[in-house]
Image (cartoon, rainbow, N blue to C red; front, side, top):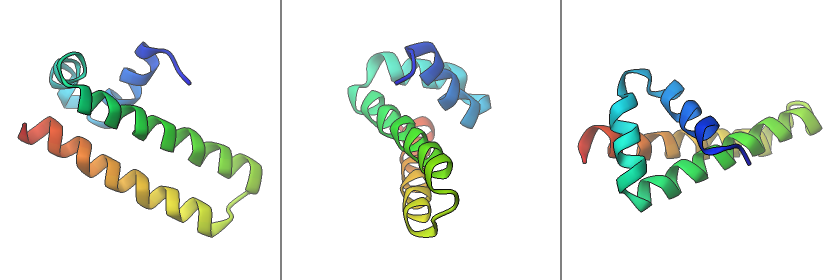
Length: 81
């Protein structure tokens, strides 16, 4: 698992115009921190699957779908809460 700064960097990189909002949510909202953790874990697994299994479609596609769902939830937190 990555350091806190690396984790926040990845989330901020996904939503580059929302750095302040992401930091605010990360420090004040436990659900948002858990969501960030899930998102980063998903990314790590996706990278590992790509490396270990080439492009085995089923596992990779499933994690891509999970990643998109998590990105939707992150978007909801960042822009709607």
